[in-house]
Image 1 (cartoon, helix red, strand yellow):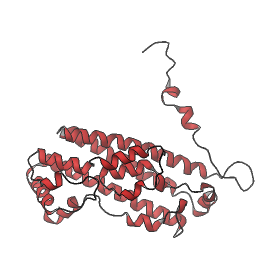
Image 2 (tube, helix red, strand yellow; image 1 turned 120 degrees about the horizontal axis):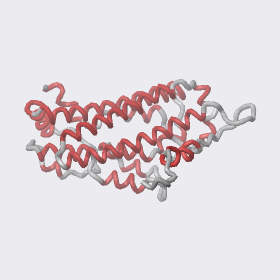
Image 3 (cartoon, helix red, strand yellow; image 1 turned 135 degrees about the vertical axis):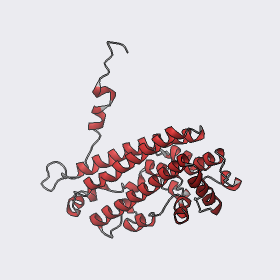
Image 4 (spheres, helix red, strand yellow; image 1 turned 180 degrees about the vertical axis):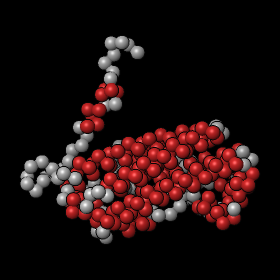
Length: 268
């Protein structure tokens, strides 16, 4: 590196841009400044988006490793994703320090903005295999990230890569599953369940990968559950910000992504 380079901690991490990216929209009751708790709300959600970006980065790496049949680094990458996910879930504890009255002090200023509009979270869902064409319709043409979202929708998910990995290691994955429509919902398959049972009984290392995927599935369900409860204690049965169905919609998402990994539990 050039000794005369001006690169330092602030410029490398873009600290100035990060710390000036919080622009509260509320007006305090006393007319001075903004409502105190809006800053926490903004910072938490900006941090969420950064973690979503990192998880997508790690998921892309995990897919590459599985395609290359590199199990050991794949296990390490899956563990990293799970650790990040636990951190994301833990941040809900911070949000829950905000009372309903504190949230309502600035909620009206949010206008139509809603977490439902997070492109990166939808990318995460698609990358893992929870795909719905209807989700794309919520993001208008020209919106930043929409092209990436569509690409995720049309690309094989982690589940599809995992099935290919099992096939490459000699496990009997049906051709219909290996060539399935990757934009379709993941449905239980008795044939895949039999292959998974064979994995658990014969290969301790690949079964560890299966367990890491179960951890990720459970972790996402934990995130959804904690999110539901946080929203319920904050706004109750009200419509969500931006006109979403709020708690009712969030409750509908509480389901496993990869049902075959759960179905085999009673057979082991």
